[in-house]
Image (cartoon, rainbow, N blue to C red):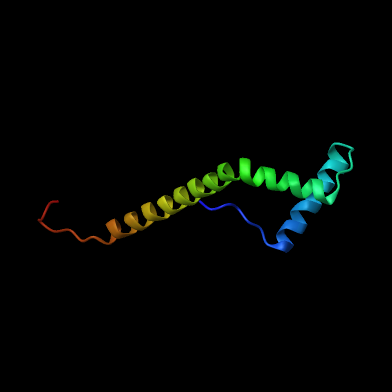
Length: 84
C-alpha cells in the first residue's frame, strides 16, 4: 500500500476538524501547522489500520452479495435426475 495522500481540499477539511476537536473537546488551540503534522502522523502510523478495516468491510459486503447471488442461482435450478 502506498502512503495515504489526501487532496488539498480534503486536507483542509480534516485539518479544520482537528482544530475544532482540540478547541471544543480539549479546550486547547492548535495551529494549522500542528494540525497538519498530527494528520500526517496519524496517516502514516495508524492509517493502514483504517484502510485495512475498510478492505475487510468491503470484502464482507461483497461476500454477502455473492451469497445472495448463489442463492438466487440455486433457486433457478430445475429438477433433474442428475445429482452433483
